[in-house]
Image 1 (cartoon, rainbow, N blue to C red):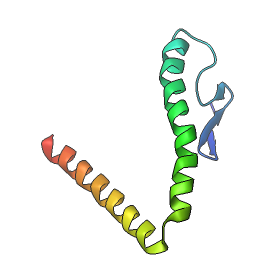
Image 2 (cartoon, rainbow, N blue to C red):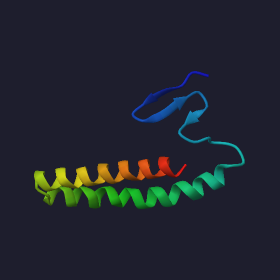
Image 3 (spheres, rainbow, N blue to C red):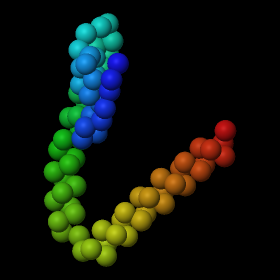
Length: 80
């Protein structure tokens, strides 16, 4: 099977992203729909917040998020 990534979506001959047939589809949709339902309006909210932030505050916020993510990954690795 030949697969490639275009715009972050896995593209192959069998479908785009998730399987379109099979017994796991209801479970996949039950997980995907709430995630999409929260992410879609969240993107507009994030855009509105970022438009009102100064560049300095936006940079500081990104630094905090990256440092927190790194600390969580290091904690997870140390815990193993």
